[in-house]
Image (cartoon, rainbow, N blue to C red; front, top):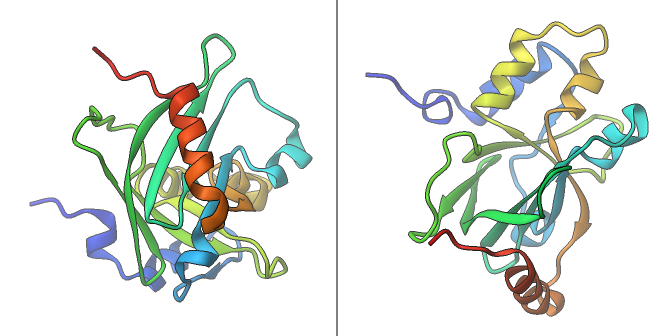
Length: 179
């Protein structure tokens, strides 16, 4: 029987696997306020090093433990591709899709919460399945830049006072459920 990566490894073991490539610190004791926010891929740190790409992804973790996952491409409209609830336990954020969403196996469901040692303010989410495997397989000349190319980086907090309106606006403009 195959076991999922996050159930076979403790959060510190997952962080150790990342540290084998580039130094990071695991974030094992965050609260909802420290996690709720807008995370982008590619994130601002990667874009500052390599420039913007042709598309991107936005993960909105709301303080009520719901989330929206948006994708933008150079050929189509921005759209919500996943939504549901999120949870956090000992350094791992988990996403659980709403029943109305058709599950996409390419979307990570578990993320390791980390930061670079010199960046005490940052929260990075590295996918515990696909992204971690990519980081381990690819031996880049600049492993920190490679890490930044794989993570969702938090660039804005979402507080309770703005969450309801922001979520409603995103759903109105970017949720196109498949018929």
